[in-house]
Length: 127
Length: 362
Image (tube, rainbow over all chains, first blue to last red; front, top):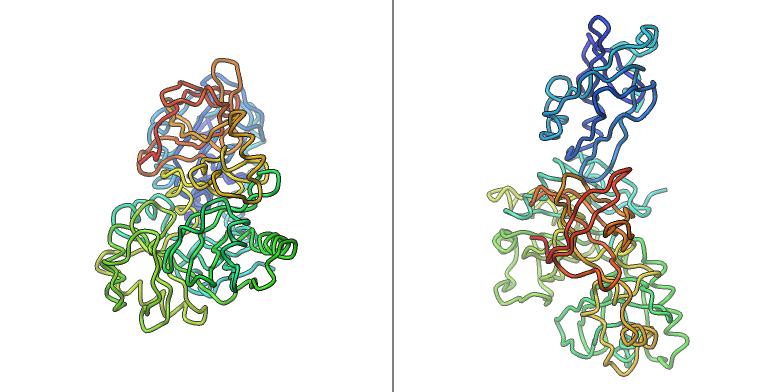
């Protein structure tokens, strides 16, 4: 499973790319593989405010429904509209085409609490 | 401790994702549910269904016993025929749905759902002991059979390479005892996918031999192993009931879409009286097919509405791999169940539009 070095990861298998005060969020290669064929994605409205740990959307495979949990608190400033029509890109391109939302960070310290790539590799190795 | 089929090692070697399915360690997918589903519709797929149960009924009076036990009319069977049937409780709820094989006037085999084997056997034993069936014997033969399903438009061509049996002469819901790859096998033209194909029963020690022979014989067509994930989506597209979803102790066969195998004109069978009364009074709910008209995936237990009135509940749902749209089976209050009715399905906090459609879906 690919784990990208430039990203941070949550225990719920979301990845986060922080650029200035904007965090881009998606789900990891490990998570998409565990889920199987993704057939539906539901994302929040732009302008909604998220608390870390709060569900912000849903990813559905043929078999199951999984909540997406916000890895960080902040306001949703952009969502990936294209992903709603191409949910299978969660499987084919989890770190690029299938980014999900961009959050304007409310608390920078939350970023430090996420795993770095090395810690996330150990985390998934145990599963 | 999970139960395993004789093909467990092969599934793991193939890299299947394994799940606990009613106490069995079973492959849910190999390459992916959608890919496997489409392979069965287009070419062929091979399923390990060795977890299914086999219960043998033998002796003089076997037919009388089976007639009491099952909803369909087993007297219509001749040797070499298979019948889809069900067993009901006294109150009309379903014990299990099953396929019934007639080998001889005094020898039958029930193929039952894996998670119901012990329950079914206990029920069948109870009925046997209460009735006047002294010459009938019952045996749980589930450990004596492995079972593979070879399904899809290319299934005939593939199996023909491994058997001398006349497959062309074998019609739907009939079986023959022959050899596959040199192994004594019951070759049954039945399945749970809606495609042409076979279910093969043989001694478990030969499971790897037959699996490998079939996979090799099917290489030109690209025969693929298929997991339980695609088994479920394939049956759902054809509106085949799955016990625990469309049928249960709380759902009668008249409601769950199998009225066509419930022969209320039979002299008697367990559950007949309450079912006849239900039919007379009007069956309160019906199993229908729903197709989403807005984006969304219907799932089991989601409520179904017309306006604000809740009129039913989803029993099974998925994103149809063939149609690329959400489809579901649902129990709907009679009167609201006609094809063309516009409904909505409660998906999380939203109401998403769907329509009652003709089935099978594909």
